[in-house]
Length: 290
Image (cartoon, rainbow, N blue to C red):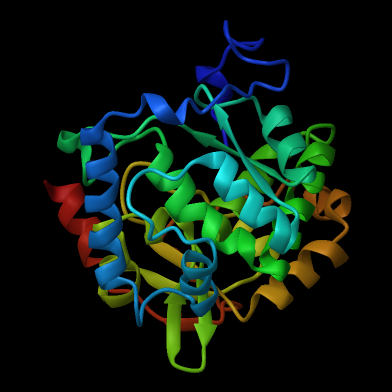
């Protein structure tokens, strides 16, 4: 999701009214294609046994292993045949209303630039590797694809209810940094994790963070860290359950019920939490002391 403080109020020069721009795939340099391949290979080596099976299947059916930066037209043609989604390029972060409307219409907006070699491990603004490698494979899964559309529709409603920050937390702790329970144990599915070499290890293996069962109101009360590893990860039981909770929830009364509920600390544990793994907090303490 976007940060409204960083955004223009109207599309920048060269962008359409819906803030989309041509990907200009032919303009990518060989070095940029090579960097994509490096990032792709590095992540794919570590994701088996870590990533949700649906994510790995999406990589396969969308043929993202093809060398070089994906062409959005080719990628969208494959997605359209599977779930009716398409990928469009944007000049950067877009306003929330634009973002939600694209999701509600089954279009995913992605940045077209790729990070530099110096930014290979971290950059603040999402690039094409984060957006396409991290997000698009799960759009090939019919249930998760429906969840993303439902989220966009819910986002448009949230703009009139003064509760955008609540919905942003739902996106952060599912779409970006979600974990899922599987028969083989916990798996990662959030784009912010699967596209990050360091967090792919941290989210599953490190003893520091809490790993809690997903609860909609709990998630909406929990702030997140935008520039470091999370102190708490939420674990969904299945994409079907996540979609069901989203479709069945009446968000307006939920927002009203939370108006006077204080935000929780990012490392807090409640007696009502379903604790899957209690964290030691060691990483956060180390960072705070440094």
